[in-house]
Image 1 (spheres, rainbow, N blue to C red):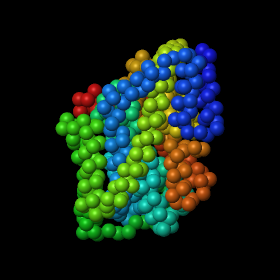
Image 2: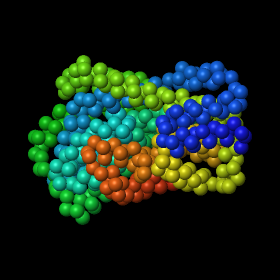
Image 3: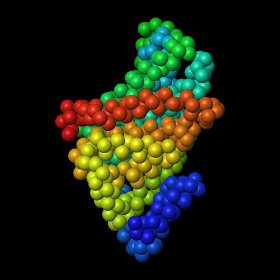
Image 4: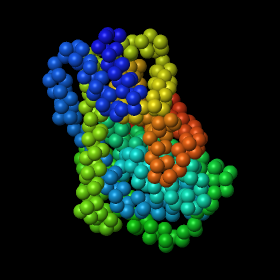
Length: 429
């Protein structure tokens, strides 16, 4: 390891230990490398700006963030929750099932786990607590179900992965459908088992006329994923254009269909979006500089040769990648993992003949597991914070939902057709 690279890693680890913002750590460590190396900073700045200027896919990220914020600002989340409640009927543990179903529906609109947990999760947890569910269980299943968001299309992490790997966004979106539905089904089975064991209450009986009324009210929101997916896969719009259409449609239904958004509300949504996009942009910009350093030091090539020296089996490689991401996910933000670690692994995966769609969905799914994994799983902190539930209890309750997610991770890792069936059938790969 060269001296400049050693300094880079030392500064990054130091800032991580001090619990400073990760983006700051990436920028500071990169700056140290460039100073020690005597590199021309203007060349690096040009490279960072070219990333934003020439990669149109990345524009979809702020657009989907805006859509998520609009959806949470209006009554859209209420409509989705009531509609999902009508689907579950009188089954035991119905609100737990509603939690998972609502997350699956909501994920087709925003592609953000944090938006799901913070917006829809607040309604879900309160309703479950009022109905006699343990607060810790309510928070845990909310955190687990929120991870469906970035797997089912549209998905912000998948858009970023497409940028990193030059992979089709449409193929990634379609490949995420089956894993997301599979995770939802497994979580619903888990909820059914727990509900029976703990004697959680049954749902209210809803007559078909009431359910029809819920459906009609929820219909504008439910059309969102239909408009997005039909538009993308018929070629009418690109994923980036779909993000813009989604944002505009979210405003229209919030203002006219649900009458839940005024000028002040829209202003707050725009402010929140600017903050979120700013944080994401800094991360991507910092990661671009790190990528420059990785390429200059031939780090990816060296790591790839080292891994290929250990094993030539793509299945062993996938196992190693999963283990590393799971460990990193316990301590690091998913954005850092995706923007720093994943680009190093992409060339190795290519060399081993691993399909980039399959690899992208496996690592994305794995990173979502990290969002719910102690000690630093962000979704655990969010659900604990919005509900006032002690974090210790939520961390204890999340154990079995994590096992469920790991089972699905193993399935999609070693049965590639789960992720590749739909894109292949649609002729996207």
